[in-house]
Image (cartoon, rainbow, N blue to C red; front, side):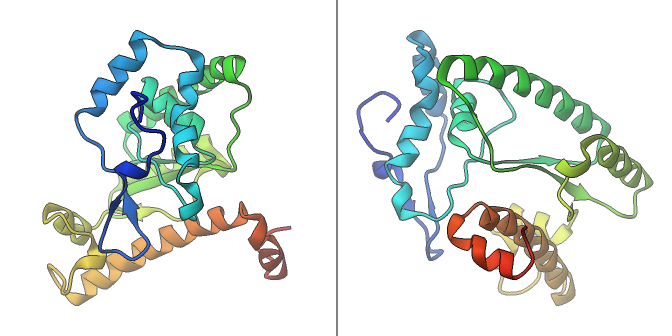
Length: 224
């Protein structure tokens, strides 16, 4: 698609055994596209991914794009294509300062992009604290620092550290796919509760952005 050999992203979509969940998997060849785009770069190339998503968007309620925290051409395509940003941040000093630096560069970059292709607007921007361990004083102190720095940008819930999630990942599974817990049923249930809580908050943020849901959300007092 990025080479102009396909007019839609439909060819790249792969079905999964999860009902309603499809994927466009990445691969190392993606780096080739990065270099090829740079060789003949034009400002409108930053809109390539957005245009591609539009070719398949009628088949989906939500499109999630997983991008590395970089500012290459493909990552800039992601920033232009997205209408909301969710940024995961572990409670560690290195991650905190690198995120602050990334956000500063992101702001400068978006200002430059908008001069070339017009406004880039997001429905919401949120930061999610991940791998949080309540038993570690350093983590609690970092959360206080993040709360003072990011304020309303922080999601209310945190994705806490979980051996169950890590163990499932080693086996290339999610916790939702495990028939029985790696350690115990209780630990699996706690991991599922962590994930469900965070994902419910994300889902709520998304639903607020849907005009078709606004009346229902107003009736429930969730939005003004």
